[in-house]
Length: 166
Ligand SMILES: CC(C)(COP(=O)(O)OP(=O)(O)OC[C@H]1O[C@@H](n2cnc3c(N)ncnc32)[C@H](O)[C@@H]1OP(=O)(O)O)[C@@H](O)C(=O)NCCC(=O)NCCS
Image (tube, rainbow, N blue to C red; front, side, top):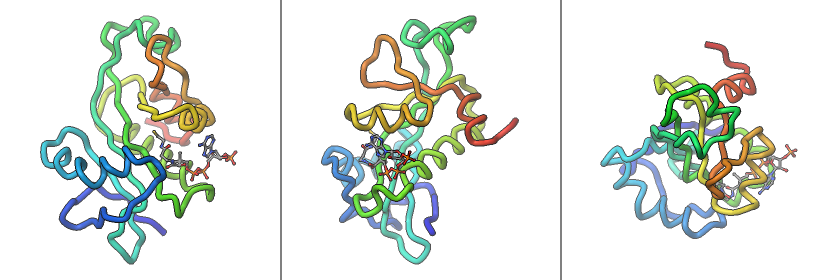
């Protein structure tokens, strides 16, 4: 139903996207193209099979975690800092909310992380509010002890949840 592909600002239609959070809408329209060009992050979008209208997006980048900002289930026994991936700008069009697509978008993003050549122990997400936090907790993300707007999921837990093995 939707294609998941890397953002191509000259191909994909960004105008009109509305996920209900102004900062995320603004980022897609005004900053995503520049970030893609500078390779600040890899941004992926969903478009319908017969259109170039963006209906969802998320950004992935390499990352490190300070060990004292990670729960012991992630930080125990590994050197500091901990290699990780960062997922940000995760949003779905208002038109698609409440139909299970958010869960599918998260699966798509985690599958890219787990299947990528990035070595890492954990996926960190940046969350915009408590409502978003409860969405990620449903999928097994844990709170980071010292950083309030970040949640973490271990790569191996993500792979297990996705049914992926190395
Ligand atoms: C967060 C978001 C992606 C969820 O998308 P969605 O399509 O509405 O979610 P789904 O229909 O796939 O729901 C998946 C599950 O999460 C639950 N859920 C959905 N939104 C939720 C929320 N905001 N808080 C808590 N749980 C939520 C659903 O009840 C569902 O659970 P179930 O399978 O037990 O029924 C979407 O609301 C969105 O884009 N919001 C604006 C941007 C945003 O908040 N991004 C978060 C990152 S900062």
